[in-house]
Each structure stands twice: as structure tokens, then as C-alpha cells.
Amino acid sequence: MAFKNKYTVISLFFVLTIGIVISFNIHAFINWIDWGDTNLIELIRTSPQSIRVKTILEYDDFVCRHLRKGMDKKNVRKYVGDPQNTNNKKVWMWINSYDQYIKTKDKMTWQAMYSYDKAGYHLIFDKEGKLLHNGFNITVAGSPEEYCAGFMGTSLDVARKYLEEK
Image 1: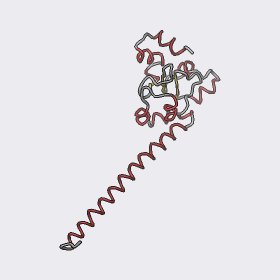
Image 2: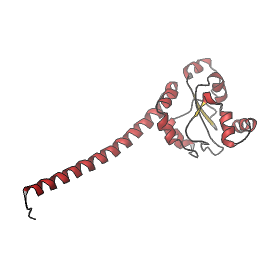
Image 3: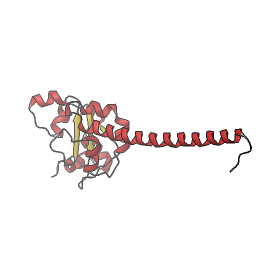
Image 4: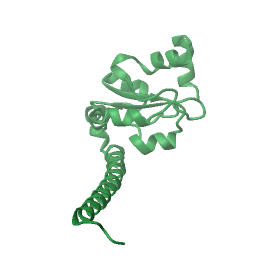
């Protein structure tokens, strides 16, 4: 293979070098995105319950982008970890004042937690354990019963009974 002049060789070398650099950077960027998501998921999921609401708030765009209607609890737990409430069949709740609430020695039910502190987040699941909505519900904007009534298109009484049934 003979080249007519030295500029052809330099141009070919330049084009190949740029192609390799671009290819490497794209691959590195994709790995960085995956690595970042994995670490962020781990950070949120394993953050102490005392700061979980703050962690969720800090990364709410990321979390809400991943929590999708119809997700099962196992997949939801992968992103947000365990809820703070113990009666978590249909409602998962996190409140801002978790540390203070623990000191009250009150029940760890979502109803008692909501009565104590309306600042936080909650998720609502159907009978099969599937998420009824995208993203988080902001507790200060409405109770789990109010959100559930809206999602299901029912009255507040029907939603309350639904959330309380075993």
C-alpha cells in the first residue's frame, strides 16, 4: 500500500486516533453511568432510617425515574430499601422525624407515623404487592388514604378500608 504523500499518512493516522479516542470515551461514559446508578441505588437503599427521607429527597429525581406503576415490592426495595413502618403490606412510609418518633415508643404503623409527622414520603401497593403509582407520594400533600382514593377512583372510606384490610 503506497501513499502519495506524507499528508495522507498523517490524515489517516489522525482519523484512526480520533476514532479510537471517541470509542474509548463512549465506553468509559457508559460504564461511568452504570457505576453511578449502582452506587446511588446502594447509597439510598442502605442509608440509615434516620436520614432515609433526606436521602430520598436529595435524589428524588433519580428515585422517581425508577419507581414505576406495577413494580413489585422486591424491585421497589432495590431502590429505596425497607420502609420505616411495620404494617407495610399496602403502605410503605418514611417520615422526617423518625429518630424522635422512635423515642415515643408508639406503634410503628403508617397510621401512627402519619399522625405524628406529615412530612415524609409514602408508597401505596395493591393486593398483589404491585406499586399503584409512579414515584413517591409526598405525605404533607395528602394522607395515604387520600392518595389511594385518587389512584383507585373511589371514596375516602373505601380507600381506608382497602388499606386496612389484611
